[in-house]
Image (tube, rainbow, N blue to C red; front, side, top):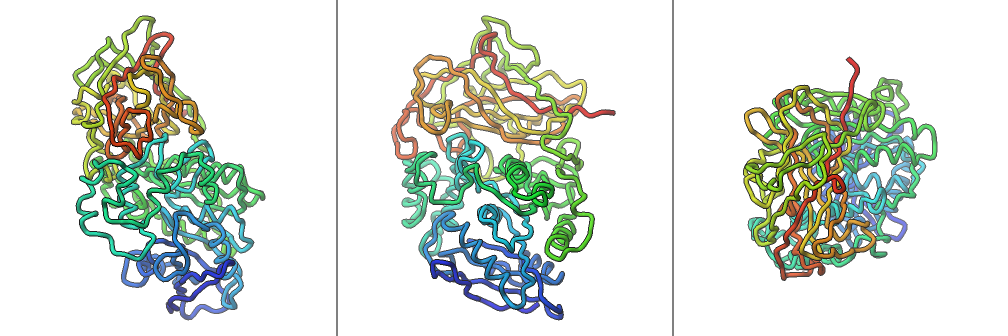
Length: 568
């Protein structure tokens, strides 16, 4: 292939974006284009790298590949800000590519994480030349749509995904071209403990980022409207193949996006050609897993899948008009962990899914693995005592290895030994149970504080005692009535709250136990609630909260699992 470096593509406001163009040598006629827009530097896609091999694969299949530095990044002009002008820059780039004399006029898009978000943002502008896309791990593209408010992928349940957001901002978020201070990277684990959270980038030596702007606005502040985060009314018109993984922070958002594109498409062509594939891997790792597939510390068999052949067939169908099997593949393909096999369905959740409630029960002492907490399909009787623990922000429940940045599934027994973690376990299963779909928890809670967090974790307990996390969720209690405004708690009053644990596909085998952990921190995966009810990101003062989970006939705290009932 032939590389034409740093072609400057003009945007409607006069800013020019540096773009590398890879031309396949020996290919005759006008060619379709595959576009990759990146904030991480287009040079990482050049020959000699793993990403360069992807470019070569596409080019060798007779596509022109365009890799572009986003606005204000590396050699592109303009000012950089998270998601700023992503929609119109994507539109203008695609239209420019379609009009070149070497172009067939059809453009597809590709890329993972921020590069996946970029595809969703431009899809809402519906460029006429956009023929197909493969957005991978695009969980940060949503704003108010679906009541998710996942701006920048940094928020969940109103809490800040602290470790991942801080690491990304340190490595990639500077608005000026300055090297990342080595001390900031080396001291990430220590930095995460410092307060206030809003000044964290300044302490890291980064004085020009979007960190302060993000944390100084509420989730419904009009400031967010200037960005193309999905609000819920967007219309699209492009076949899309969504890809993500069960260990990714945004897997539930990907499944939402798949359904959103299907129901918000303007044409039958788009409506009928939405597909999703979910592997068990960590972020942006679906295509490169090995056998055995170890995700975190959990062995998940052999999850390899020939993604590359699927991708090439996808683009051949939509960019070249070639007839192949890709549009006849199942709409949904997912890896069933525990059974360690690929499954298919025509919709999400899979047909045959039944939502089953498992109730939190105890004699009033579910604290730690040594407590008396149980998980039962039988609802509690009246008068069953509640479980209480002290949540101290100075000593939060730890996430686990890697300063909370490491992705994957890990043994939770060290966490379950703490008195500030409530543990509810089922009896050993006499029959295997497939749990595939969205997971929610309804808790009845009270607190001594005006605001606190409640965390919920679903765990698969093996017969030898190993307890691997499957999914987790969090809700900042002030947002129990919605993210539009924070409502303080009244000390001692019991409130129902709903916690989303996103989605999963896990087979709880015979002899395994289903376990639920409830606490008020999961640090540093999420920032600590300081329990004062004030601005948690600007606050430094913290107090201890006495938090309770209630489970009685009128306050039946439970987790709802999507159980797939299959015919023999």
